[in-house]
Image (cartoon, rainbow, N blue to C red):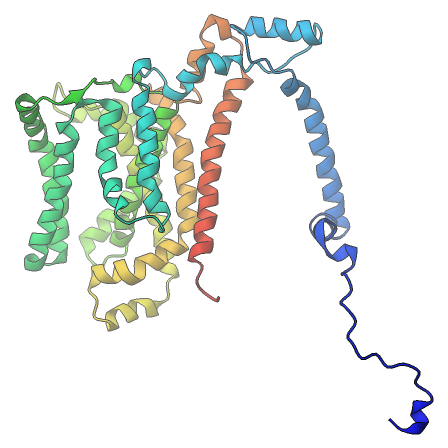
Length: 439
């Protein structure tokens, strides 16, 4: 600095100023509200209208909720309690009905002394599903996941323990057939054998073998008829079984639709298009009424089993189309890369193609599962007591609760919302976890 300039500058800072706090409008709740609620005249108008509607809705509904009654023996007693406390024209929710009939909404007409069996089945279901949904759990738990369907069936329906054991033996026969025939006759012949031999075992030999084993070593628990199922036990049984079996079947149908084999492709396309073109209620009526005409006289085909088969087939057709969309979204280079590595068809699908297609298809798959779970209420049309219509009508048929309307539907809707919302949130979690591109 020269002497001339030294006389003109009185102070020079030798340290940095600390950063200033951001404006209030750029941080916290104020910024969020400005960007999401009041970002322009249109958004501001919509926000004001929406808030007004919510206030109006809450102001009209809150008195009904605030005057809830939890302890009463009938709807008449509920109304008397409300009118005595709030006036002769007051109304309120009568949740005492749920307190009195919760067991019917959950278990239907399942024997009360056996409630521990569906409860234990639900807890074991959580254990079985956990290693499938979360990869940080020990992989050894998947062995229990494979055995759970047979164990769950035995716990819910009871009867001889040899029935699920013989059913599992069919899968073991299919696996052994694939391992033995594939090296000799090729992968396609191995897959056909793995599909045909278990079906033949279940149709021709499973019943006599299970009966012989039960006669030799009688093991079992008390049987429960399918007509005693109802409520959420029935909805969970149909919903989770359909979800578990429709996904692998949908994958096979999607691959079959893209196959170069004419017969396989034709059968897959015909099945998918037929199922997607027919309402689910039609298939349920077919399972309930028409199927017995094609069976030998005296055949007892369990009604829930028929419904499970139809629901699974129905969902698998939609899953197949969702997965086909994921397969179509993959670039051709992925298939060429699998060929360049020398992988055969099944290894390429298992290691390269299908993992990417399933990742792309997650939103559509979960959406189909949610729709399937909600469609379990349609079984009321084939004589089964679903929680929404069947059990609600059964409760309202009682003279003590005749005339109750909103409370059972709100309760059932809330339970369905919890499970459907949970599936939706898990879908979002899985998408974030598997989103490895462009990071």
